[in-house]
Amino acid sequence: MPKKGDASAAGDSVIVTHDQMDSSSNGPDVTERQSGSSGLVTCDQALNQMFQTSNFQPDSGTRLSDYRVHISDEPGDSTSIAMNIYYMHNDDSASIGILNLDLQTRKLLDLSPQLDAPATLTYDSSWLKIIRNQCGPLPLGAF
Image 1 (cartoon, rainbow, N blue to C red):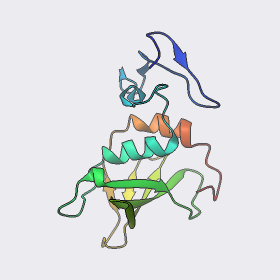
Image 2 (image 1 turned 180 degrees about the vertical axis):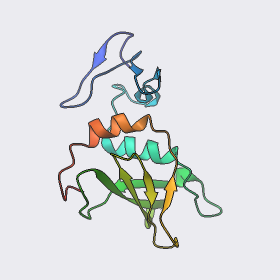
Image 3 (image 1 turned 135 degrees about the vertical axis):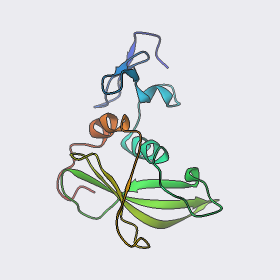
Image 4 (image 1 turned 90 degrees about the horizontal axis):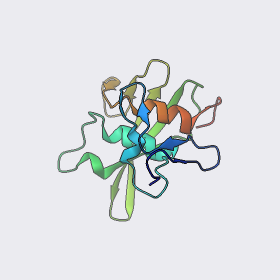
């Protein structure tokens, strides 16, 4: 982790200092919670951290930490990120659902096929700034 006031950068990553404040929440930048020497968060890590703060209801007998999300291969529009939800067990994984994060409206929808209708999930919105920086720009069909 950088010394107080020092910055770290890697490629086209967002520069984050140890004591940087997130202007949307006036609290410590959420990247400060990440492990690793640089403290920089990838798109995949940011999406998963946001998902872990959501009110997604895992199957009985499982925990939210048993699930991971990954950007979907299905085309979407340029203002949203489609994600597949995977249940991870030992060295195996199974796709169990679909999420859509609309970057304009800030809505996270659970579009999983077992639901009667899409469900709006709540989540820690301080991850949006990092997701926009690390996952974008997202051209049409990039997912």
